[in-house]
Image (tube, rainbow, N blue to C red; front, side, top):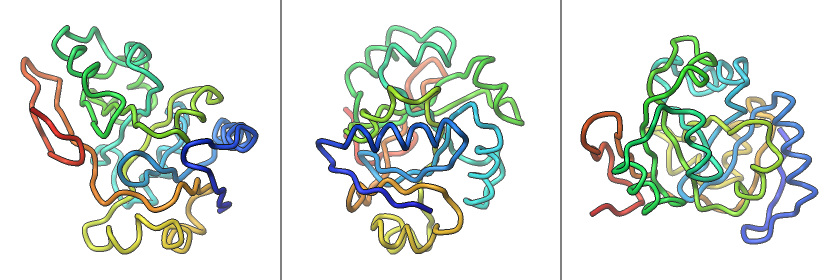
Length: 204
C-alpha cells in the first residue's frame, strides 16, 4: 500500500490526479472524511466492492456502504425523485458529517450482487475529497473503517491504518488524525425522515 500525504486545506493537485487515475484503474483507497477514515473504490468497480467486503469481513448485503457525491445535484443520478422535504434537509446539512439513506435506482443496483434497493449518500466537508472528485470517472462507494473492538486504536491514526492494512488496500490518503465519531445517519426512504444514528452531525 502506498501512503500519500496531503495538506488538509490545500491538497496537491498533481497527487490528486495520480490518485484518481489509480482509483479509475480499479485500486482500493483508504481516505479521510469529515468524520472517521473510510475504505472505498469507484462505485462502478464490482470487483473492488467485493474486495472491500472481504477486507471488512462483511457480506455485501450486510455492508453499510455510501456513495461519496460531489454535490446535491449529482445525487439525482443515483436515486429516484427526491421529495422536497428530503431535498431541503440535504441542502441544510450538506456538505457535512451526515449520511442520507435513499432509494437507489437501477443504475446503482446493477453494480451490487443483491441489487441493493437503498444506498447511503454522503457529501463530506473535506478538501481532499473535494479536490479528488473532479478527476474520478464515477463517485466513490465506501464504508467506514471501524471495528467495535479496535475502532479507536487502529482506525483514526494513519500510522495504525498503514500497519493494519498494508497488504489489504492499495492507497492510503493521509490527511492526519481522523475523527472518533461517525456520521449522523438519516433514513429518507419512508414518508418521514428518521434518525437512525446520532453521530458527529447535530440534528434538530
